[in-house]
Amino acid sequence: MAILNKVKIFSGTGSEVLAKKIAADYGQSLGEVTISKFADGEIQPNYHDSVRGCDVFIIQSTFAPSDNIMELLLMIDAARRASASYITAVIPYFGYARQDRKDKPRVSIGSKLMADILTTAGADRVMTMDLHAPQIQGFFRIPVDHLDSSVIFVPYIRSLGLENLTIAAPDIGASYRNREYAKALNAEMVICDKERKRANEIASMTVIGDVTNRDIVLVDDLVDTANTLCKAASLLKEKGARSVRAVCTHPVLSGKAYENIAGSELEEIIVLDTIPVKEATDKLRVLSTASLFSKAIRNVHEYGSISTLFKTERSVQSTLELKNN
Image 1 (cartoon, rainbow, N blue to C red):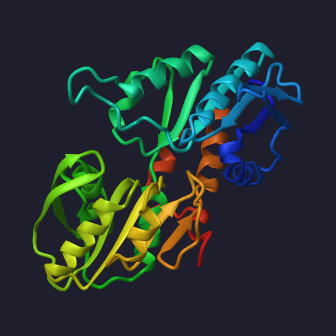
Image 2 (cartoon, rainbow, N blue to C red; image 1 turned 90 degrees about the vertical axis):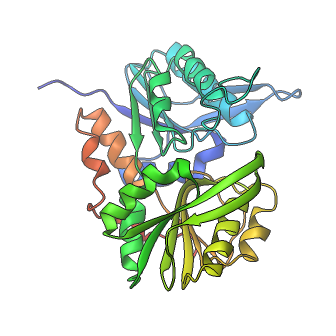
């Protein structure tokens, strides 16, 4: 039997709260690292623990500001130069995933660039959750473990006991994800077809399907300004829906998102802790991903299967761990 390397789990400053939960669920403390900044903002990480010959897992979501990205890259480089055996970048929220193609002339493909610089920095593997476009995995030349939030959300939706459950896709692009939810929950599905003027601004929206007297759950990978979700909720109620909720993996929540949600027709919006939530509100509920990431880290280290974590019928203990009641 092969002797496994020692596991060391570290965190950047952006994901420290989640990283502590992941490490605790795994059964150890976070490794000590100091993130120093020079007067001009330049970042320098310094590991206090030896990582020589270790399997190192560095947890950091790459949400704004861009310092979170630089921290992650520099921590990967420092671990590589300190002779870590294997480095996994654990990125619960993978920023720039919306830039996955050239949708107009003279723009970058930001998600491909992110994949390249993570590899160049020295990452041997990437672990993430609910990429905006799953095909982004193909941008990497290293293994990618793409975790699925449905193993957390599906049991929660079941626990609500909604009598006339219908899953709603907030746009055509989300229809595949929503179809999987509808199958897992044995529910009907409708689509909110939207036309955008520009990023984060909707020109028009229509509902494809009947929602009369239905309890609607909108499913999306992220919520940014919440304009789409709030407009969809309003439209669904106008079309006769009895209640409207939303589940969104990544709470980007920029601009007037909190204000939009508070004044919307949404009963509640359920998100995960891949990005720290800035404000606690009555309509916002946060479920933890710590147990799922902990299991994935263990399976990677012990050469176990990651696909076993994708089964939506599996009851993940962290599903009921709520940040806000």
